[in-house]
Length: 292
Image 1 (cartoon, rainbow, N blue to C red):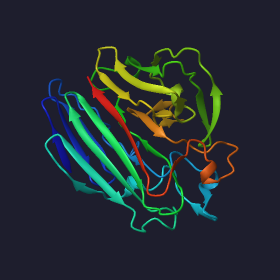
Image 2: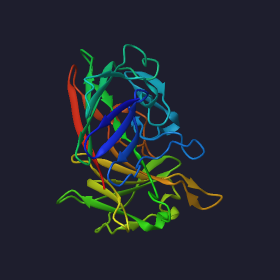
Image 3: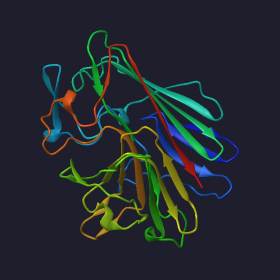
């Protein structure tokens, strides 16, 4: 486990999946990340690659072949190499080295850098294509889960979601049907949404053209996830149909990709939200989490 620390935050990150496991605010002594209790959901903040969400029929076609791939891909279960480890920053790297060719026909490197700045954790992604001749198609996404409530005596309903849209962009909302995506509506305004189980009755809620999501308690504590230039964000908690309740966490997920649409043809190059890299090209993006 890698430990980062500055004057405000203490962060622990595992080399398995390059997954942030805990964030502690020194002043408030609040612990922000979900515990990873498998009774609800055994992960904390997996990195999604080379797909985000579910494939229609669990498969896709690329480079003339059909492949099977589980939801969110394989990188969340990969062991990363650690480099440039300093007190407040660290880099995790995973090279494919032929390991995934039975499920994904491209060779790549994914580099994830975490760095602390005051009360913020910055996450920088770099994806390199090692292909010399063909275009590489991929998606990448984050899936951090934050504890709700953060303090004893609070309830989930004491927390609200505040969404800030990209200036001059029309926001589209999407819904999931059996894990596949379809357009829902185009909201003219994005009111603050109290956390309640009904939000997640049909799985995640998904939007495009959102640049920040803030999850905040009535007492002022919470987290803001800023995602400039990200095309999508998913917001999710695990819903229990039998009890009509949700797990004690909410995920805020910046995505460069999205689940297959209900009418998907299953061709990776035509997949909604897919990114593409020219031979030997590089993709870069960043998001940040602010804890308060």
